Length: 121
Length: 361
Image 1 (cartoon, each protein chain N blue to C red):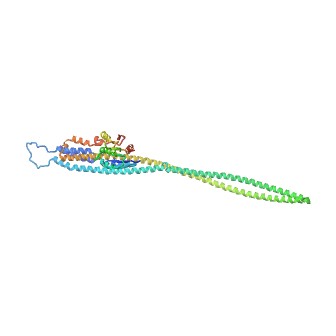
Image 2: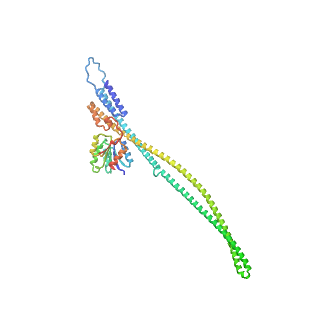
Image 3: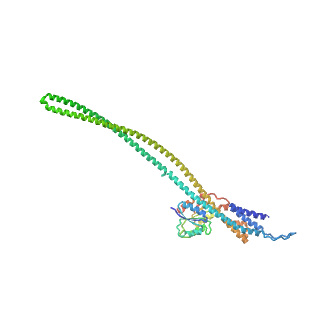
């Protein structure tokens, strides 16, 4: 059964690619252009998974994870980081903030779908 | 003179970096420009034995370079921004097109699999062949039943012949009885009055024998007619049976040829469809790989973003006469802190996606 997934990325083309991959597998997608936009779109929505970039203007991915985990309504919503960042230090920072998975771009569509299945299935 | 050459080489390198999409070259070019500009600041006048007469006052070279940087850096930033926008739009369009292609290929694949798959045309043809075999089987069974019926009719003919023989026997018996009755009448006449009653009996017997002979003759005639009718029926039925056998043979031949042709076409269709499916899957895999590789745009966009930010920083530093431009190592350290890609950190292109790129916490 399809899940509702919030994708957060300041790159329009990346949002388009992720959306294409997820909707092709039967999921519904909500888009946000940065962390701040994502927090505004969370309100009142039933979200099964958040897929977020790390480096974004206004509020970055790590800041978004911390804000979501601090919100009682969404603290159990799994978050997967999808980023060009491959440094262990950044990964550890994401893990400490509460992210459940870290995918380094470029990604294979099947990798993303497997992660979605594992985190929101 | 060397400083002037270095300045223009650095500016050229910076522009070439933007043109070639090599952010590193652009950054190095910008930093080189800044350093060269500082070197070109006017030095304190040195005493000379024979000073030349004072010429017309010129603007200090450093001020000219600073003015140049303040003028061109915003243009460079604007150009880089345009490059980013063009890339975003083009790559987005490519993703959209590839998405459409992938969907259409999947539809082709589904249709092809449905045609030659479990419930497709192949299955329909197999069912048609089985049903055709059932129909021709029914025709053969009916033909065999007719042959049995002909055998039974042939037996009737034989029974009728026996009946004819029996009717002739009845006629013989009637003839002999008639003769006996005639003799009895003669004897009765000889006996005179005593034989009168017997004469009446002999006469009645003679009439009965005559009637029996006529009946036997009628029977013989009727049985003969029946025999002829049966023979004609058997003959017509045999003729029909021969025609039917010939038709059945023709039906078998035509059915066999049609099914053989259909099977050959089906096999060809299956082979072609399998090739089509194979080709479609390869194309899908190729598109998927292309889409993965197109994600380079996200990485270059981030690199260009960092470059834009550094141009802004340089612009502000030059504008403020900030001493940071005098320390290239510090400048680079601060620039590197903002790096997010392997290409920026290590100067190497990241390899394609692998399973190591997914980490679950």
